[in-house]
Amino acid sequence: MQERLSENRARILAAARQLVAEGGFRAASITAVARVSGLSTGAIYRYFPSKSVLFVEVLTSAVAHECEILTAIVDGDGSARERLRAAVASFARRALKGPHLAFAFIAEPADPDVEAARILCRRDFGDVFKRVLRAGMASGEFPKQSVDVGAACIVGAFTEALVRPVEHAGGRRSDQALVRAIVDFCDRAVGGTD
Amino acid sequence: MQERLSENRARILAAARQLVAEGGFRAASITAVARVSGLSTGAIYRYFPSKSVLFVEVLTSAVAHECEILTAIVDGDGSARERLRAAVASFARRALKGPHLAFAFIAEPADPDVEAARILCRRDFGDVFKRVLRAGMASGEFPKQSVDVGAACIVGAFTEALVRPVEHAGGRRSDQALVRAIVDFCDRAVGGTD
DNA sequence: TAGTTTTGTGAACGCCGATTCACTTTTTGG
DNA sequence: CCAAAAAGTGAATCGGCGTTCACAAAACTA
Image 1: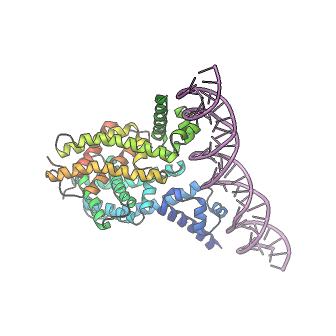
Image 2: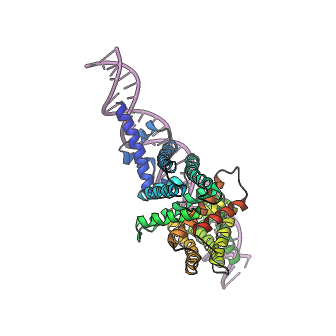
Image 3: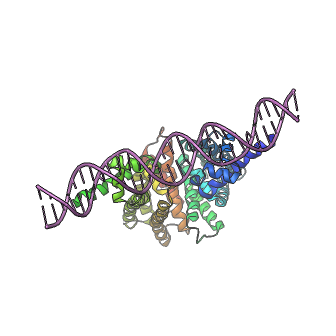
């Protein structure tokens, strides 16, 4: 059945995503993917020619999904400042649900093929934020600034701020307060005024 | 000769640091360290009981050095805002000289022992920035804000902004302009006023 | 239903890198 | 100058992991 095949393919991708989310790329061996997906190692290779290809797809599909969400916010209504705040808040909230995943996708080094794919993904993330920055500068809401550096700094700022709490699992402040603080930081950083 | 021994030990540490700086932890195998340091693999184990221990020392000593430099700036003279700008600029300039090193030390995942050491190192970095933030808030230069999140965001912002240019080696803007843009971003982010 | 093709299995293979160890070279102490 | 100890060597070992393959089960086709 065709249905069974595409279901298996999806199951493999889901297993790989889950493993990355739980323990980063290091924890995502083919053996582990096989175990979690309920297939044998050999079967994985019926669906993906190599580990690299599998994880490039895991990465790009997840990032594409996030980018769609961000794009909808950034291209929506409201002032540039409001849209930026909403985009950062949305990303941060989603990242908090799967922190390792977000980190792995944004920063964790992997084999060169995955690395190459991530460069493209990062650029995509950056482009979304660059768009709001340009809009805000055009409308006079934001002062003149480097959009390249600004976008990179925004991504870096909330990545780091989100990763930190993961590492010392104890003493977690409320997620809501954390998101709020990050949004405020980014908001001030771009120099927004009403 | 005692001198020879400590010289060898230093040579091993230097070789390991150099390899991480050039290609991240992935490129720093014991074999490579042996080759660069001019010793045999076996000799490495006369000085360090395991690879983990070696790289924990590489990490902590380098970070301690950076922290000393930052601390000197942060505890120096001038307004909180000036000190923050100087600290960020100094860190960014130094990181640009060995971008892989900075990235590896701040973000690159490694084995659990190194990972544990890095958590401590990050906290040290954060503490330095927290100190300026508190000073600025106390003097009224900075508005009320979360120092934990602020410090993390600052570290994250310039890390990401510095890492990005490494990845697409072509089209590098001038380092000076990059440092300037990052400093301005962080400056606005903490809401500094004269 | 018999034959063929597709899908699934998991043990085996090959590679790579950390660690060890039998051995050689150098240093130390008398 | 000569044991004994320390330092250094690098090939062999060992474990883990990606990948392959000979074979089994299942699904189509006529």
